Image (cartoon, rainbow, N blue to C red; front, top):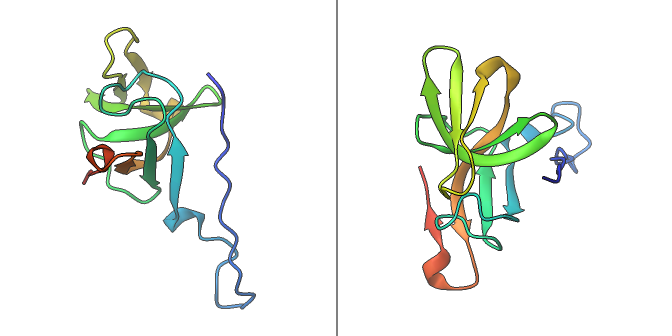
Length: 122
């Protein structure tokens, strides 16, 4: 799996009252490269990630684990473990301690070439 860095968005306003970056509130668009989340997120779909989104059980999340970005469904297991569940049964569920993960954001929208590919999540 290829690791993709998420670069903070630079603020173009050079003002002392304005923060240097707005990465914590930025939306990020990424293209799905594999079939692990098919059919909901097929290869080629573009997903919009909210870096400040609310994380709930069953949310679709972008997580950094072992220096890689992974798109999966978030399912809490107990107080400090989480299952990262793919929708495609050919891929395995990953179980991690929450402290070993960095949540990059929550999927809020899916886009594609056709109108039927567009969907919002909240």
